[in-house]
Amino acid sequence: MSHIRTQLGTNEPLFQSLSTTPTMKLPRRGVWPGIAMRLRNWQVNRRARRELAMVDAHTLRDLGISPELVKYELVQPFWRPLRDLRK
Image (tube, rainbow, N blue to C red; front, side, top):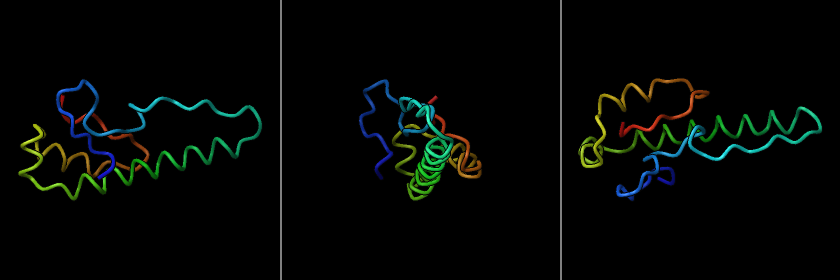
């Protein structure tokens, strides 16, 4: 579960998503590099939600995350970045 953060004492989001990662600058030449970057970001979002789905309810409660909120997050489309679930 590469996207799950285990340090709860930090101010960093528990799950890393597109909105919490530093934005990459788009190359100035061509459209294809931008399209490729968008596809990679969507793949990261999809993978993060898949990994979140594998976390059991007991572990989620230990992390301070509501299982109901996780269920809501799992039905979101792949193009939406994963939110910080501890808020």
